[in-house]
Each structure stands twice: as structure tokens, then as C-alpha cells.
View 1 (cartoon, rainbow, N blue to C red):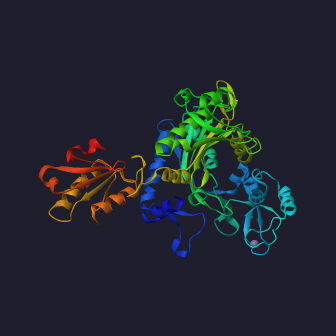
View 2: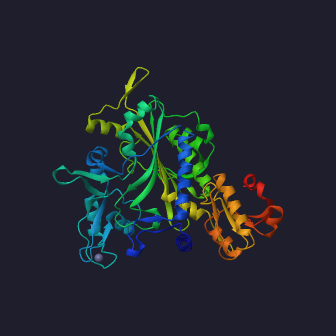
View 3: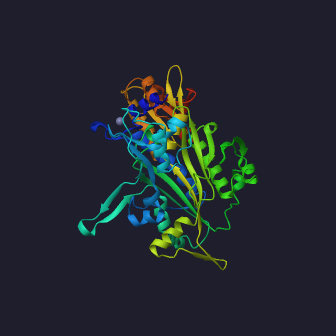
Length: 477
Ligand SMILES: [Zn+2]
């Protein structure tokens, strides 16, 4: 299935590997004309769900930032993978992955010396050529560069996450947001990780898209009156001691498995969001980070994972209580005071972060909506996500029919409905093309249209067709 989806994505301008004519570069993907529309729709669903529904502010910060930012955040020291290279052929490997292949899961927190010991004792060799593996070392995943020339150059990094750039301007947001808590800020944009060996196509990229929401809260108020909107979501989960079961968010909170109500709320909200994108909710699962996996400052961290039939577990969003760690770190290094005063108390706000990937949900939407029938393949994308809402076809290219079809196309454009005009090939071929990019409605203009102003509307999922008046198209869709 994975290969068939990739083939359609390339052929129909959805996504394809970047720099193809130069042999490609692992970990980079283009969104084509169709894919970039779908991606924007996914981003807008997330954006609206926080900016409109939650009153968040939106910010956009540079992708390049000076070294101090990443010293404060801990990324210069800790944002590393344990790397080993083959002495003979030079192939790089994540050491924990190699050891895992021999001893099974649970090696991602081994120290360098533990990994070295294991590689030696288990006699692990280069899987590619059988050569000896070199000493394991810390490999920083950030792309480093310099801003400016000569002695004025500033060591800088491409950001590995958007979050830090949002935190840095907290005082500005605090003033603009009229000094209230909770205070939410969303940032949608590119981030970069120099992965050792990116695989799985769009699931592990070196340049990727994120939508990260930071909720600055009073440390004593990590609750929301809106929890009732999502509390009855029943979901499968794996908790921090690896128990797997099914429960509602309300029960998980009551039983103390989820420790913070705001985390439970954002998990429920995200489940709703993914469902509205067209991701099959039966394939979604919650996973709580284990004690040794969670960042030391976080009191609780959860992911929502999608169980992909072709690629296995895919993490779509992480919801985490980051406490006052980030603001405190930036206060220490910059000297800027980021404390606030409320009800006579002076404190540093805590942060509940909701960090969405965009490329991963994108792939999961495509996979979840992929349908294969005897005579066709199509993507059953929800209208909100579909790249175009309507396709317009003139039946033939003569007798004033293209002009009439153009009128219908303009009518849709006037209503700001994204339509797709297609006049080449048989009607059957045009249906196939529209199906393969997930267009929910096709409208055909024919000879009867010239007589009575009716068109044929055809529904993607059912293939059902009916005649309707041109004047009724807008209300119909
Ligand atoms: Zn080798």
C-alpha cells in the first residue's frame, strides 16, 4: 500500500523527494501543487482550533537563532544521538538502534559507555559490510552555521523546534496579551534536525514543519472549564509503566494516570482535530512517556500516536508540562526578568506545550483516506482538507460548452471556493484524476446545460450522480 500511495503522490503532484534531478537528498521532501494545498488546509485546521477556539496569539520567528538560545534551552549540550561509524566503509549508525536490533527494545537511554560495552560484548558489526564499529560519541542534531563575516560572525543554529523562539519574546506577548493567564501562543513553521539516517519518507525529515502551541499558565491553575467537551473520549493507551488498556480521558484523570487536567484536555482536543482531518480514530493511541524518557523538568508528557499499517507507530503530537524550565533558563542566561505578578503573588509562568508535527499528520491523513476499489483508487479526504473542493469539466471542447463551464468555474471562484478546471481526456479519465487528488465533487457541463442550466454533480465516495441547477451548486456543496 505504501508504495502505491507514494506512486500516486509523485504522479499527481502531492509530494515527492526534493532535488530529484540531482539525485535527491535524504530527509527532504517537496510539497507539490496539490500537496501544498492539503498541507495548508491541515495547518489552518490547527491554527483555527487554537487561534479562534482558544484565543491564542500567533507568532512567526526566524528559523536561524544565535547560539545563546540553544545553550539556555539545553540543546547544545543534550540534543544529541549516540553515533557510531563503521571503520571500514564509514556508514554511520545510531548506536542504540544497533544494540536494540540484537537485544530488543529499551536501549534509547543507554549511556555511551553502556553502548560501547554492549557493542563489544555482543560483537556487533557493521550491518552493511561486516566491518568493525568505532567508539560511540555524542552527535548534535542541530545544523550549525554563522551569521555575518569575519571576526563579527555569530555562531548560530537552525532551530530544532519552534518553541524556544516563542518563549524568548514572552514579555512582549505578556504586554500585548494584556497581562492575562492562561496566555496561549502558536507558531507554525519550519524546523531542522540533522538526522543520522532519515528513513520512512515523510515521517523522519531533516527539514520539517511544526505547529507548536505554548500555554503560559499560573502554576497553581493547570485546569480548564472546557474539559467536559472532551472528557468522554475513550482511547487506547500505553502508560508510563507499559500497561496497555482502554479508558476515557475523565477516568485517566480521576485515576491520576494523566496528572494534569490541561494535558487531558489538549489530548482530547487533538484527537478531535485528527479525526476532523480524516485520520481513522481507531488507529490513534495515547502513549505516556516513561520516567526515564521524560525530560527531567517535565512532570508529565504524552504523545498521540497513529498506528500505520505500513510504517508502524507514528508520533503526531506531544503534550507536555514543561513547568517553568524554559523561561527560567532564558532568564538566567539573558538576565531578562520574565516573572509576573498576579493576586499579590510573584512567579514564573509554567508552560503546557502542545507540539504538532505537520508532515506526519499529512502522511497519516493521506494513508487513512486512501481507498482502493476494483475500478479506481481515491483519497476520501474531508472537504476541509481536500486540495480543491470541486472539479469542473466541460463535456466537449466545442459548441459553447467550455464557455459555460468557465462561467461555473468563475461562479465558484467568486464564492472563494477552490475549484479545479479540467478539460483534457475523457470524462472517465477526468474523474480518475479528480479521485486521485481527493476532490469531493465533480461537476460536468453538457448540452443539456445550455438548454436548462442544469449540471451533473458526481460524489467522489459513492460515485452517485444527480442533476442540479447551476444556481443550486453553492448551497449543494
Ligand atoms: Zn561498514
